[in-house]
Length: 360
Image (cartoon, rainbow, N blue to C red):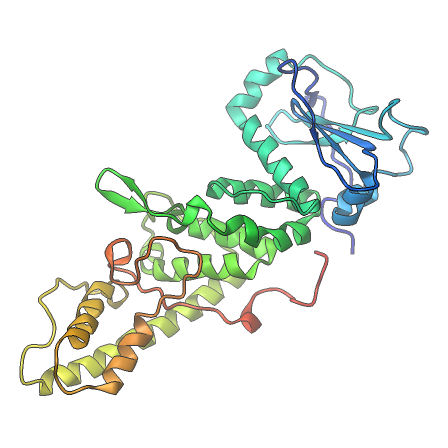
């Protein structure tokens, strides 16, 4: 089955315009591969890239199909390059690359203003560079959640999702999106705010680490999402039915653990010779009482009374932290996550894609 973007060429409307001129003196970004001569020039808005057709064809089904399409002009595109592609922008702000010999040049002076209103040219160039870096196995950095969303969107269009997925883990390690940030008295991470959106990107990429990290965050905030509340000021996206079912199942399992631990705790409180548990305000929603469970766990840990292995095991289960990329150093019931449980999880066998498939 042909990939989505490679199944047909980009349709050009009469309103389509070619980005022809830009800031002068923009040096090309040249990707080097030993023993190969650059034979492709890609002009992404105002930024030229010099790359190799063999690398593009290896990692992108789009370029595999269209670089040597039957309607391609005979002979090299120029004296220096076998292939030349330039950016074509639609009236709605969508853009793509088209063979330079077929793209009718137009002045882009007025176009630039329209583009700036619809998309960030610099961010699109960065995303394209990141995608090429993945193809060449070069390091790249994820500075913010939009970097992930943008490179995923491009990789989806150019049918290069597998190679971006294979290289993304290195880009995520140490990324600022997992670090604690402050805005006034409010603490947050970009990851917890954008988790519902990144879950969809991870699903497209079939990236287990990012999917699981996003999944844990979404499950921990599902009570707010179910009530239609904004999560950190952002309306949650509509996830596809497959993801919704997985999230509901994980949320139910988490709730069962919490209620079981709560029942064991209640039994212990009844038989306890002294007050067990500090006076913390609790929510009627059991999934928002992580701070209270943490306080109970700390009291058991730092006071000397008869050990209760059953209670401790249930507390450990609900207070387990399944985040692996988080750099805040806080767990459930602590500061940023004081009202959230992070014990949601999904097994490898339950990931919503075929792990044996290598091209999608």
